[in-house]
Each structure stands twice: as C-alpha cells, then as structure tokens.
Amino acid sequence: MKVTHAELTDKIQTAREGLHAQLIDRFDTHVPRDITQFWFISSMCDPRFKKLNFKDDRMLSDRMRARTVIWFTNEFNANYTGRVKVQAPDSSSAPAAAAEQGSAQGQRNPKRRKTSAAQFFADSEEESSAAEEADSPPTDELEKYLAVPQIKYKTERDAIEWWIAHKTEFPNIAMMARQYLGCPASSASVERLFSQVGIAYSAKRQSANPETIANIMFTNANLP
Image 1 (tube, helix red, strand yellow):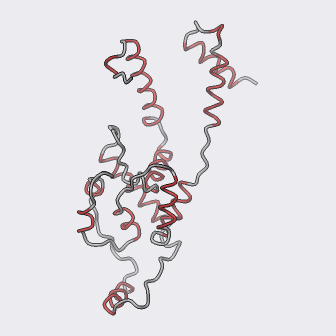
Image 2: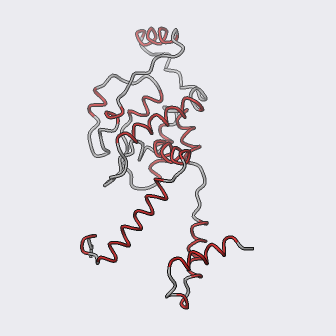
C-alpha cells in the first residue's frame, strides 16, 4: 500500500519535511567544496551516472551539471592526461588516415572542439543518441568519453564490465576511474552511531525529548 505525503497526518508531514530539510542541509548545503567535487567527479567516472541524469531528480540544476564537467575536465588535465599512451592505430590503415595522423603530429596541443554543457546533458539515459552520432567524431580522449551516452544499469557489476571493455579506448580516464571509484567505503561509523542511539533511547527513556538524547550522545562521544 502506497501512501502519499498529502495523506499523512499533519505531525507526520511536519516531521518528514523537517527530516528532509536536515538531510539537504547535511549532505548538500554544508558539504565542504572538496568533498562535493569528489562526489561529482566520482559520479562522472561511473558510466551509469556520468551525465548526472537521475530519475525523479529535482535538486541538480543545469548549472551544477555544467560546473561538474569543468571539475572533471580540470582534474583529468591536471593529473591524468598523458599518463597512459593511447594505442597506436593499425599499420594497415588507409593512406588518407596516415596523412591525417602526420598532420596531427605537428600540433602538440590540438584545440579541443567546444561542446555545450546544455547539449551534453540534454539526453537522458532513455533517449536516443542519434544527434551525438551525427556530430563530428571527437578526437580527444576526454571529449570522446564525455560524448558516450550514459548506460542503463541493473547491478554494480555493469560499471566494472564496462570499464574492462573500454579500458584500452580510454586508458587515462580508466586509471582515473579506478582511483575515484576504488576508494574504500564503509558504513561502520554510521552503524556504531545507530547502535549508540539505540542504547541511549532505551525502554526507560522513551519519554525523553530529542535534546536529552543529543546531550547523552554528546557526553558518550566526548568523555573518556
């Protein structure tokens, strides 16, 4: 049985809205900038979420998505570009392709084709990428990765298998993805916190107000 927010009692609605506001405040408003950048860059390293298109999302603006592309680009250019050589083309390529390659070698830093951030985030994972395919093919590893459509997913294994299949195509970004997505994550501290709250909010303290429980938790965390 699904109950909408409007069908809840006034007290439950108030509590739910207050909890939501606290979550936004804790995990969005007051998150340090470096942590925010790490989260968003990590999302772009994951082919399932690289375009930051999330179902029923009402928080991320186009401006935030565009800013994330800048963070991702700056991090790649500063620490990952050129660390792994892109595989050389087959020697049996056509003469025209060889001529293009020779002319490209004369340019140490070829200018990257500008791509509109609004255009990059226009398509969701459910939409076709025909417009992207009709555009001129990207020649830069980063630009090529950003142009790849966001993949559909069912399990976490999908991202691992995608990078195994594309690590030679995007060797530098693959290294970046391993370092960002390979960071160890643990919920041990959260589990300990919930355990301590359960002990503090015992059967004998069910009438205690939130301030009392908060003071008990503060005392337990700060006194030897």
